[in-house]
Length: 190
Image (cartoon, rainbow, N blue to C red; front, side):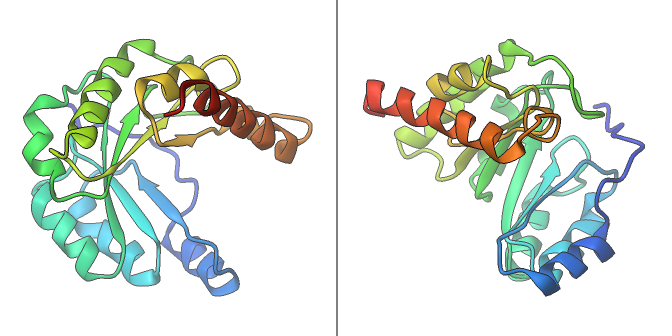
């Protein structure tokens, strides 16, 4: 599999350590890096609430999940848009979060890939039937036009980057997205 990830680094371990020293907010660290088996545990040891790695880059994703949990964090497993879910169902039993990428890892502002919602629906069914016990998360192209589609497919947690940070009022943008999901949940009683 292609394990190529992004050339840019948003927040490295020293910045995460500094943030953790000044806040009690839980940090969810999504590592789009090569060789996460070497680096991810450091984020957990620093106090990150959840550390997510890409299945395409992990040498031993089951052992990595165990190491992350032993170091004190929850373990998240991300899959890229073209990576099928089925080969990793047994691996996901060791994880707390499934992060479905709805864009190719890289830079913000990419267009949402709606085809990934099939993976979300499969994961939601496995969670609802007790086959998996994890949070279903989505990252990439989430905005006011796409968040309801993702919620309807079964997403529990949404990552919205450009829709929030490019807004004139980021707090209002977050509230608008949250309101859309809450209104949908009230309508569908999910």
